Image (cartoon, rainbow, N blue to C red):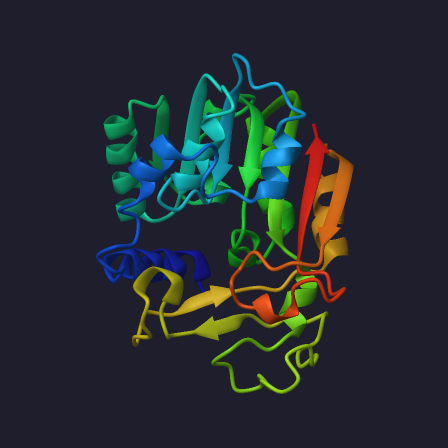
Length: 263
């Protein structure tokens, strides 16, 4: 099964199905807010880094809004990679409108061209990216190849524990016990979905098939360490950044994290 090609078609369909208002606020918010579209804890962490004359990249950049926000820290050049061609075209148009030195490239993350190897001081991975890859070793191998020596990989993601929870609209979700664990932490089979991407479309629709995968925290850390990178910081948070588990905020359940590693 070529799950990556299937996901490409499903994501391009999802972007075409987006609501009329989704994405229209990018330029306004970037001009009127300090660092929109990225989590405050990530903003606080990035203040500890020097972006002067630095090149940054984002794997799975979607419509580019997070990378645009990160560029406000002072990086000289930004490159976003995403599999969906229509999202990339939208991001490139937005970059022109904003006058930001960002380029967006449509490609499978595992096949990023060698011209980008040893090119970036920082690579960012944000919420909802890792789940689309079956083999994280291959994903982090490409990240390591694209980083300069001493470069940093910065991840701000949903915590793997959230894969054990039911979410609103799922068959195993119990609204009276929202913290009920209903899925195995060690799940190996893919999640298969055909109901679209609700946060973009604001509706459910019969979509092309999305294939996604669960990864434990140890899988993530070990895949990074196997690829010439050392984990320097891991911070776990008990608040939700996905919008699916807000009722569990500040209840002591790990819901999100920041992980920083260095080549």
